[in-house]
Image (cartoon, rainbow, N blue to C red):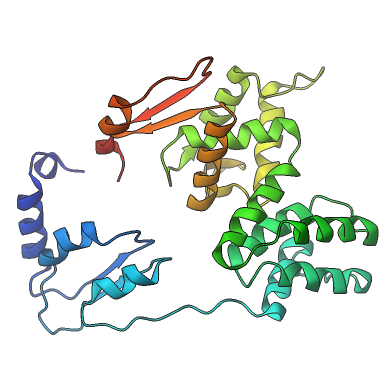
Length: 292
């Protein structure tokens, strides 16, 4: 951000944005809005010159969408059908060219149905299925374990994540939870992340193999399980930056705290009221100013 903007207070920034947009046609997207507080502060910065400008909000919460009331329509995104869920599951497990074997088709449909039409849940579950043997008995056992933890509605993504986490090898669990030490939606340098894994002792020592190569295998394994996403690729090959979905971030933050693996503090209020538990191995502190 330019120095001229960094030194402005909120009122001055809003005024500058208004002048910049005035008489111009614009499209602004507020993605994954959890509450309308920030919008009500910024609303006056968007002039309505009747020139076709648009503001789009996305939110998981219907009450947030209805509170915005900016002259637009509230559009509910429908969930996937069972057939669409199965198609997505099949694509993520077997790839674009290969189809699910007929012997596993019925079990695949059963598992897809238990995802309640949530694409995120389908993708996470597919990440597990891609790593286990494509055998009827193995898939049946997985389907039974998935059904036993089944809940309805939006909580299903949590159950699918828990199941995916439980299927991780021990060394990958620590590597995944370590993402909670970073800021939400942060694009993390892959080399930096892998060096931290090595220093923390998460990376197994194998004779004849470099620790960096083993750490890279861990990262690619997590990417293959649909738990970590690639931000940018390196021009010479390999991953340059990576990140995790915000729902996975929330899961990692909660799991890390529960297991006393890592405590995350965001801003002065959390820091001022923090009572450090005994034997806390890691503490991540991020200032509010650095979180955009």
